[in-house]
Structure formats: C-alpha cells, structure tokens
Length: 163
Image (cartoon, rainbow, N blue to C red; front, side, top):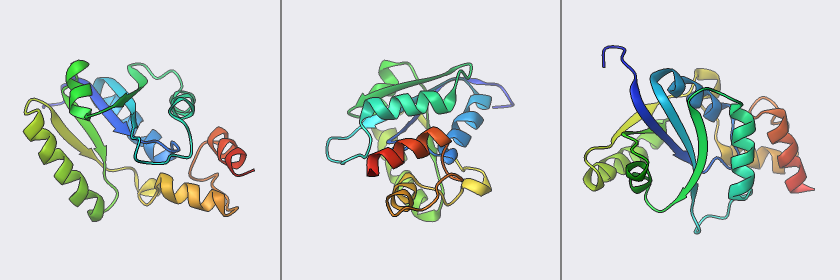
C-alpha cells in the first residue's frame, strides 16, 4: 500500500455494547481509510441486550464527530452491504487465536462470495486486548465496575438495563 489511503472500509459487528476496544479500532481504521462505516449487524437469531437503535445511538456518541466515520446498520450478508455501498475492505478485530480461527473462516467465505472485497484484521491496543462486549455485559450484570472498559454513558445504559 505504500502509506496510501484506501477509500472505504466497513467495520461490522454487534456492538452490544460498544467498548473502548471497538472505539480504539475505529480510530485506528480512520487513520488508514478515507471513510470508515461502522455497521451494526442485525441478527434475529441473537438476543442482544440493546436494540439496534440503542446501539447506533451509543456508537454515534462514542465516536463523536470523527471525520470520515459514520454509523449504520444492516441485515443479511456483510459482503452484500459492502458491495451496495461500494466498500472494498472489511475490518475485523482480533483478540486471540480463537478469534483468528473463526474470523479466518468468515474471511475466506466472504472472498468466495465477493472476491473484490478484502478483509483486514486489526488487533486492539494491548490494554483492550482481552475485552469483549459479552464480558462487559456479564461484569455489569453481576454488579461489577465496567468503567475501565466502556465510556460513562455506556456504563449508565448498562446499569439501566439491569434495574
């Protein structure tokens, strides 16, 4: 790539809820791409804690007004969403080798579905490496302090869910 920016990237996920790990990846992707679309995946088989609309609001608040970063939602195949929006790269976060096995399968399958869309794996910074939305929800549900893992407004939204 020689330091040149690519045009558009898609960072899909459930973001249930958004964590500092997600925010870190979004900021770093923003340094590599002209546009980063953060898209909440709508999966009717999962039972998320927050609605799609709530997750979009929390993401927008977490991201602020970063130039070139937008938030949306999608259902169906992420490669179809990427094609429809002329996005050439899908960003995926990796925390551990178990993530890699799963994400590698998805990336190879996506390549079969859309050979013109690449997948870029990014690792969060070391202080967020172990962090997951599932872990944050469990800590919060059990009354633990999640202030190191999520912005204050997300912590408040979590507490409201359990009350």
